[in-house]
Image (tube, rainbow, N blue to C red; front, side, top):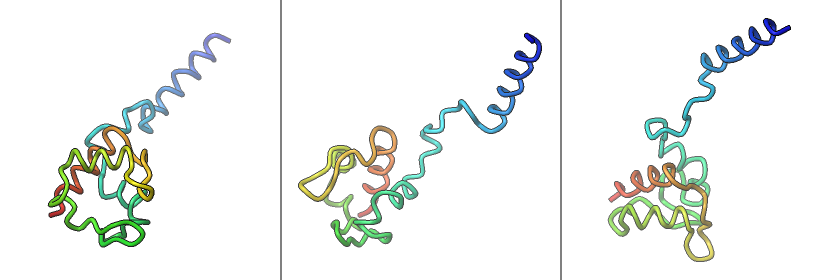
Length: 102
C-alpha cells in the first residue's frame, strides 16, 4: 500500500513538473501588458487606445507619469474608472506600457 501511494505521489509530481505546475506563473517575464490591457481595459478605452466609454490613452504617457498611471489602475479614478483591475506586478507592467504612449 505504501509503495502504491509513493508511486502515485511521485507520478503526480512528475506530471505537475512537466506541465509547469507549481511554478511562479506571475513572474515579470511572463507578464504581457498589451494582453492584460486587452483583457480588462480595451472594453472602455478601445482596442486602439482611442477611447470610448473611457478616455483616449494614445498619449497618456505625455500627461501622466508611470506612477500616476499605476495608481489609477490600482485605485481607480472618479466614478468611471474602477480600482483593482490589476494590482502589483501586473498593474506596474500595464502602467509602464501605457507610460510609453506619448
